[in-house]
Structure formats: structure tokens, C-alpha cells
Length: 69
Image (cartoon, rainbow, N blue to C red):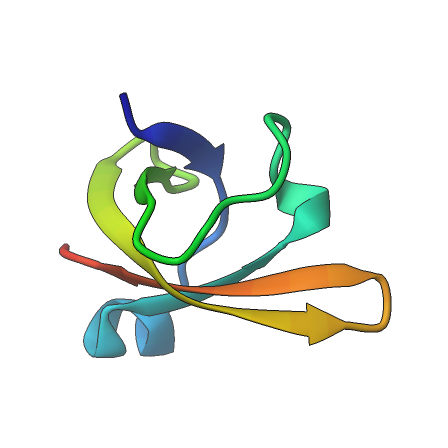
């Protein structure tokens, strides 16, 4: 079952189909590259996606998620 993440998606993220998350955004712990996610935007719309990359950051990991609008 995909991990559900609530996040704000701006016009640039929607146009590119890419969102960036961090460990702070995840309640269920870290995700590996290739993991299925569902991004829930501020309007409650659900966008299926996949973790494309995991990169180290200053305060945990950063996740690049590709999603469909």
C-alpha cells in the first residue's frame, strides 16, 4: 500500500510533476527509492507518485517524488 503524504503543491511542482519532501513530512519513517506514494494536496486531491531519488540533507533525507496530476 502506498504511503500517503499531505503536502502543498505549487504551480511549478504541478507543471513539472515533481515534488520534494523531507523526513519531517513522513510519519511512517524513511522511504526507499522506488517506493509508491500518494501526495494529498491542500485541496484534498490525491496524486499517485513514486520516490525517484533519496538524497542526504542537513536534517535528514530529502525525497524527490515524481507524480501525476
